[in-house]
Amino acid sequence: MPIEIAASILSADFVNLEQELGRVAQADWIHVDVMDAHFVPNLTIGLPVVERIVQVSPCPVDVHLMIDQPDRWAPAYAEAGARSVTFHLEAAKAPVRLARELRRLGARAAVGLNPATPVSALEDLVEELDMVLVMSVEPGFGGQSFIERSCGKIGAVKRLVGGRPVAIQVDGGISRATVRWVAQAGATNLVAGSALFGSADPAAEIAALRELSR
Ligand code: DX5
Ligand code: ZN
Image (cartoon, rainbow, N blue to C red):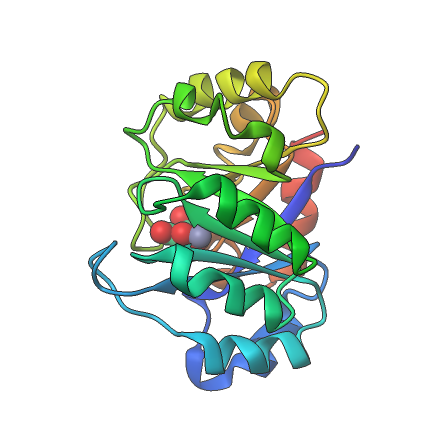
């Protein structure tokens, strides 16, 4: 399976979002970072804006919730039409129930792990998931450097997933310089923000990331 590219709009021009979505239409997913200034020290957008993004996006929408109380807020993003909804294990009170609810609403259920959260925390949850997100930076901001230890962690997630159809997403510091490492470690879905929107030609950048991950 060719690797999937998720374009993170965190580094896009938020005043011209529809136009910015068009610049990354060659991606497989539009990755939308929702931050609440509690779970992470940054604040972005919430449900009303995501609802409109879903309506105009050229690609399926992958919502990454960096928020407290995902048990309460995440289902509404699935109801809004996000094809994939990621909540953080560190914030969820009842992750099995929440993953089941997301699937029931027709979304892919995904769980994110911060850099210091061990993969073993997923052992009793992996059956309930369509995707695991390995954060390769501390969540909250675009443009940070890739944490090298993440490659070992991707390998550990791959072993845990085994033959199950669970995607392995990596988010943070993905660029031409790091894409090979994560692809070789077993990532199947790469989030890229500053590497795409910081480029004059995001389409060429998406093609380069695909090529380098082969
Ligand atoms: C950071 C976000 C990322 C961010 C990645 O917490 O979850 O999706 O946009 O940005 P880059 O690709 O610039 O590291
Ligand atoms: Zn993200």
